[in-house]
Length: 171
Image (cartoon, rainbow, N blue to C red; front, side, top):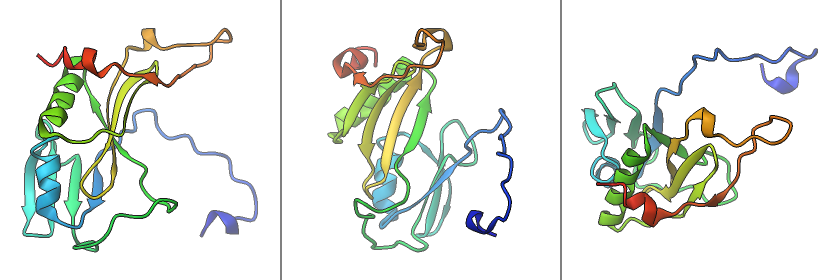
């Protein structure tokens, strides 16, 4: 049943606050090209491979955070602008030095960035993978540092992130 076929209003459902996003499957045109990005530049480890059709990657030994597959997309084109689909997948780093090391890997690989922002609650770097999927690499600030307005409501911002200062923390 679709939402448009409901005859009476339904009370909104509130997801459990312990909910976490476990993994993302990305359709890719070329598995090896995807691996060269997600494994060699982003730094995820291969957990399992299913021939030339799928690979499961993670950080820290989880079964998989990102899966790449060519089941419906081998040799395919990225979705065009103005179409629906995934805007980006966001990878949350534990702290600023870890985000800095990820940026250093991108710079060393010559990978193009689309943007970098300080949102007050987080610092984020934006780019695309080889298949045109949006990727956000970010770190959250401690909640005590988050910006709030005079009424106590969260007041996120979008300011320029100083990439040189971030890179200086890469070690």
